[in-house]
Length: 424
Image 1: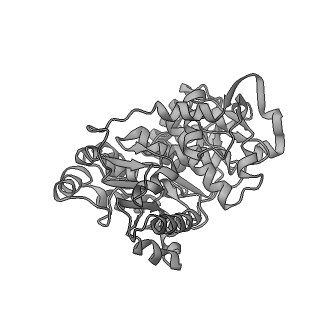
Image 2 (image 1 turned 90 degrees about the vertical axis):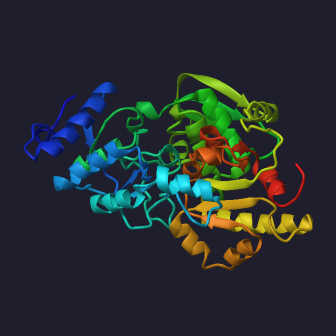
Image 3 (image 1 turned 120 degrees about the horizontal axis):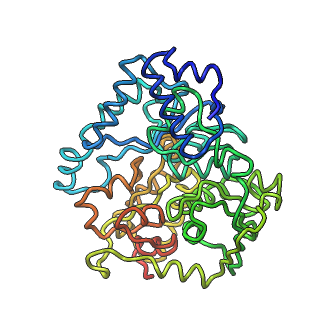
């Protein structure tokens, strides 16, 4: 790797031993992927994936403390993934005991470290940091040092920023020295599509299901999706962005996609069109039957597959303001149709603190509460990491949550019926 004079000086320890170690780590990371150089981070803010104070993560806290003791902080302010706990989310005595005494015992301590290192504000906890309410919205072409797979794929694809799928800790190391290795999705060549996905469904495909199918097929490659604009339009409005948020999260978790292009919709596809498709690209056709095949092959790992659900999570990744409003209306209408006043399954809709703050200023918030629905800022995945929660029959419309936990996937429509007393 070729380093500039300034980068070499940091590596040689001219700015202290701690910064030298950080630079050495980034150089080793770049060497592993045959990066030719380091390039400056150009975004205003960073986003970190590690947000939870798990007791077993003492090496992380030790590393952060070494940075603080050396007087090192992030060159950028940053947001971070969601908090793991919220007393408003249903949990019994034993589950709470595990959460508070055996799992997230270092949460307050770790949040204090994050604030000292450069956290944007005390409520900058969300996997959807790129929403307007949170203010961490990179511009097209900006170079990032983000981690969190669903945020990275959104920034690359919907915003046109440039970021590799960095791991936790590497994200803040990039911010500390202000550079990241130049390879992969930072390069023009690395952003070309090696798959052409043709959507040939007879109705609008479920975002999380379509993303799952594509992720499992292309894995870490870049897909160029044709035919989806028929269903979600050619404008990046609130509805399209919410769809792509959920779609991208599924491609990134069910596969390892860090970038996708949607013909006639996402920025680079609009600008460059089919020039983004690499020579010899593979083809994948998705029709109704293919989506049904994918869905039917999801494993059900509940101890009793026929158990009645005890909890429902919607919002992984976090919901947008418009999605919260939309779910409110749909739940009200479905309850009325089924002759119910409140949801029949404990239901939690999750969103960023700033989005919930905006939502709570609307009349929708009281209407949703009247329907018996809970809103929360937590990460459902962190809740499901509790071994006692894993045993519960939990349902979700998130393919990411399904992939990483024992939660069972249903489409939005199926979830709506399940929680309002209807029949699937």
